[in-house]
Image (cartoon, rainbow, N blue to C red; front, side, top):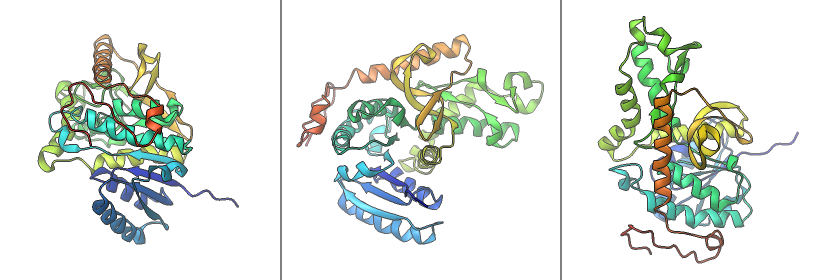
Length: 339
């Protein structure tokens, strides 16, 4: 009987990367994990710790240190991008814009040139912008590039509703849509419990809630974590792991994630979060949920925020991303000194 080991690559081993690796190990999803990071000491320490952790895993897993030899990840089934500098996100999720895009520009073309044909799951913020850049430089079909986007924000919304209604979050269908950032909105028109719209359950006090407050809690949950410990790590790592699991096990699960729109919701040419079906072919279908006029207006405004961030980036050709050494252009308004 033939067997294909599941190989997962992770780029960036700061906070989220190691937790994602450990989640993949403990859930028995990966057979081998190849990890990259420019910080040799940190990377070496994480590889040691993770390989020690595999003793307690459901099955054997090998974690391999690839440092900045990104080409080695071309063999992987899925690559998770969690590179970045989280301290730049203290004000907003777009604070990492230039650093995160530059990181993607350092590896996406190289891995493409080495023959990668698998799937990307992007965690790095601003998630929608970075996902689009990875798609552009990788040459992969859009269905092969998925941002975690509002996957976690949607989970937070379900948790808020669950605490109020005293129901399990798994019993609630609710989505945050739009930018993975401050402009995202709750699609209240599509929230349902046991097939019944939330709006039709208002006679029961358990389902009477302040929508604006619940939406704010879902949107700002990451900042609560950041303000207390200067990072978010566990939940977003599990969100990335959930998407990977959906791909490698062909689950056909509906998840709110950052995907490319081509006419859906009246939008095109950008990555942004909406519910979609994820399976062995990546993004297999985009689901157009019901939204009222105000929600559609809010979603459209969120799309414009993402487009405005695209416009801040310096042009960078695909060929330039595959020619070593890679020379990064200076972004307008970016006061960092490039190495």
